[in-house]
Image 1 (spheres, helix red, strand yellow):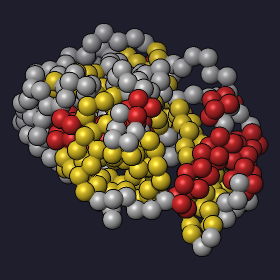
Image 2: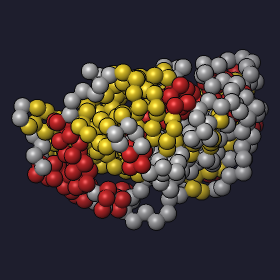
Image 3: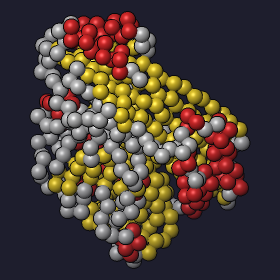
Image 4: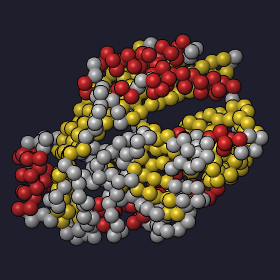
Length: 462
C-alpha cells in the first residue's frame, strides 16, 4: 500500500548521508461494544493511520511519527528524526542484521472478518451472552465484544519490505450472583486471531455466559483457602500468568543487557525442574495472538526460553540482539506508529507434558487446584504476588470444597524448581480488551500453558 512513498523517503534519507532509516506505516481499527444489564453503554469504532520514522546515526537513534502521509510531511518527519539522532551525539547503539523475510503476511480462510460483518451481528453477540446470564440468575451482567485489525508495513534501507496483517477478536461475559445473603462473581473471555466465526460452538457467547455463571456459583459457596506452604496445581489460564508476568519479562533482551534481570549471563544453566519448558512464539495453532511479523519487519520465530529446565534463550529486538551479539527473535514491538519499538513478548507459555489433569489431581494427597487469575504484582527479580479468583481443596486425590480469592506468593525462579507434574492440556489465550504494559506502551499478547503442579508454594488465606 505504501511501498512507493516509503521508497522515496528511504532514498531521501540515503541522500542525506543516513546509514540506516526505517519507515513503519500503520492502518488499524478498533471496535468495542459493552452491554450492561440490558442496554448498550458503549459502542465505538476508531481508526489509527500514520507512520513512524527511525534513523540510526553515529550510534544513536532518532525517532519521529506523523499522521499526515503526504510526501512533504513525511520528509519533514524524516528531518526531525535525523535532527534528534545527531543531537544525541555519539553512542553505542546498532541493529542486528535482518534475516530473509517475505513480502506479505496475511491471514487465510477468515470467513467473518470484523471489517465485513454488520454491526447488528456484533450487537447480537453481546445480547446473547447477556440473555443467558440473566436466565441463569445473575443480578448484574455485563457482556463485551471487541476487535483490533489492520495492517502494519515496514520498509528499511537494509532491505526490509514487509506488509503484515493484524487481527484479534473477543467476547466476554461477567456476572454477579446473590444467594442466601452471599455474593459471588464470575467471568469468562474468549479471544483469538480469528474472524467472528470463532464464536460458535464451544466459544459461543452462551458458553461464555454459562462459564461465568458456573464460576459465580462456586464463588458463592467458597471459603478462604488454608494458609501456608502447600502443593498447588494451576490450571492453564493461571499457568499463563506465571509464564508471562513472572518469567517472560525476565527474558526480555533490554533487561538482560541492562543487567536488571536475574537471568543475565545464565544461558545454559539449569534453572527449573526437568519438566519445565517455556516458549515465546509469534503464533501457535493452539491459540493466542497471531503475530506473523514484528514491528521491525522480522518474522516471529518460535523461541525456546527454557528447555527441560535449562535456560536456552532470550527475547530480542534488532537493537537488543546487536547489543548482546545475538540474533533478533521477532520481539521488537510498538503500541502504535506513534511509539518507538521496544522488546516485548508475544505468546508466552509453558509447553505441555505427559500427564493428564485428572492424573495430577488423583496423585495429589493434599493441596489446592486454582484457576482464573485476578491481578497481582511482580518485581524485577521475579518475586510475585498473584491472586487466583477460584479453586478447590484437594484431599486424598479428590476435589473437595471450593475456595476463593487465593493469594499466591513467591519467586518464579524458586517455584520452577518445584514443578513435578505437567499435563498435556495446553491452552493459550488472548483478548482484544487489554494487553501487556511496559514503558507506557500496551500491546496485545497471549499466554497460557497446561495444568501443572508445584510441590511448594506459599498460599495466603485462613
